[in-house]
Image 1 (cartoon, one colour):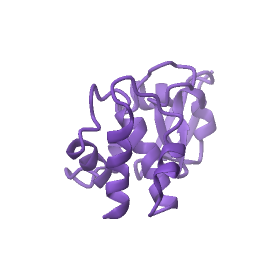
Image 2 (tube, helix red, strand yellow):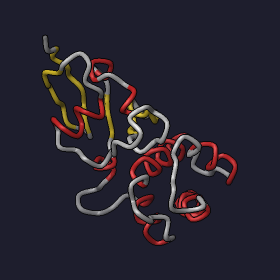
Image 3 (cartoon, one colour):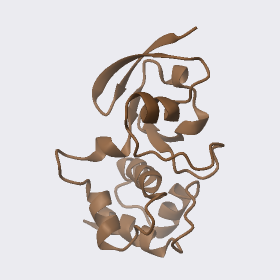
Amino acid sequence: MKHIIRMVVNKEAVEIAVEPWWTLLDVLRDQLDLTGAKKGCDRGDCGACTVLLDGQPVVSCSILAVQANQHSVTTIEGLLSGSRPHPLQQAFVEHGAVQCGFCTPGMVMSAAALLDENRCPNEDEVRAAIQGNLCRCTGYSKIVEAILSVAKA
């Protein structure tokens, strides 16, 4: 039996009927066509599906959609300002932090949460904030550089 949930997704009110076992990631990707969050490990280990739930980074493959009822969700798509990329998105491009791009949305979302809490993090704080996001393509240096460049701006 489906449950009706209400949440704010990328600043828009959404009401949707969900099965009790659907994850937040399933709803975002399959019901709302927000495909920025990626289904990587589907166990909460890789961080590719990271979104912000009430401003806090969460792995959306490990959150049931019903748990997001009456909450606010921000995806990578929600960081855009019209057609302009978020400063973090732009910095990832400029610093070569985007390789295959699979981990990038989760990395950016974790970084956005960090910068919302701490406008001037140091390198250790940046590395701690993205520790739940795995990347196979980079050595993380360019990712950290990109995040720190936005913090300094």
